[in-house]
Length: 543
Image (cartoon, rainbow, N blue to C red):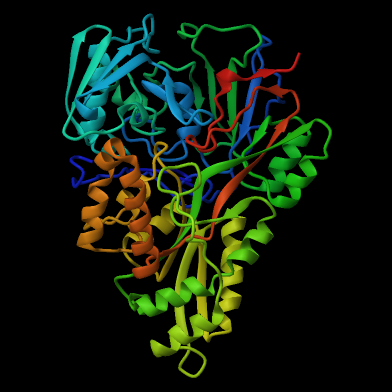
């Protein structure tokens, strides 16, 4: 769904060795889901043990964990790991700034090329070891060395020093917003690197975690309905109050209708996504609260710029014009808003004037120029999208009908995310549909991961190769740190080049999150920088 997952330089122009578990196709970079053996369920607000501690039950639509390593994790496990691990900072969506987490304060110097963070005192890892500057340094350096997942976020770092046990000092190769980078949902975790390296198999198999967060692993049963349970870390630096949820269960529920039935019965507390009809019903159902919030997650329709009929830019432009953007957004009934370029509202680089619209006459004319269209032989195009994602399926249905009018047959195939992604990396389709969201609250990941040239294709699934675009992308991090106005313009120029000139992608909509929770859950707030993450420590059951 990476959703996963949103994502992200060993030097800005360096190689990114993305983890094979990362995903971008369904609700959180990655998608799909299959029936699994039932392990039963614990009613919401009750406990699976005999200690009467409240259990919060989350019903994701995908398997929860693909990678337990906090350095390389890059997929749906963000919903669990964000409660097990912590970074120096956390992004506050209300203030649009980073706020303290494992760092209590920080400062920058030398035009943003030096950053000093003061660590919170009294923090323990789940292993019992204390968090100090040397341990934090080891964790970040191990993540950088792994060069996997979103490790690129540390690409500006030249060296890390520890003047004392409570101080981390970063010297950068170029100015970067380290307070924001340190809030990333991926690759920014501080962890007990020494214990991880000594117990790598146990970490890999979900038997041990090495974070500082409020929760630690209780059990992991891969492939089971109740796949993962967490329990309170009693020595958490924030302390515990009697009313907080001290246990969490992830009950995998691929079918939306089943999830809706479970939340109505109080067997789960949180459903991350309902369809528009069920969301409307949730708002009128006693015992259920419906929550809606904007997101940083958008849908990308990527066209093959390297091979096949879509190699012709006129075919790609025709496909852009064939999409019924307004009809799609109307059918989503509030679950999405029309996109204006690659960058969602609320982030640097969001640009007005790029809102797309359907124009079948232009599509027909462009296809005619390219040797296709109504008066020419039928054009057949292949498309893959995420299995189980009703919104993507709706896009495909509307696009198939529109293309039929211009003598184009769309051979669409719904696939589990990993299979779709494997096929995409081979260049084996004309159109690839997936979601994208940022690793931290900045638009850089769309450009660096999805549109920068890549010999080893990971997420550049339009296979775009353009030296001028690459050069402009590589300048973005430093520009964003030193001259936000110039960065804003650079993002606008890049979007026009990628969308209009190169026609590498169409962006139909930005998701609006529509959640269902049991009415007894208090304190829930969506944070778009952490897609589908529930910070359980911040919640409490009514009464």
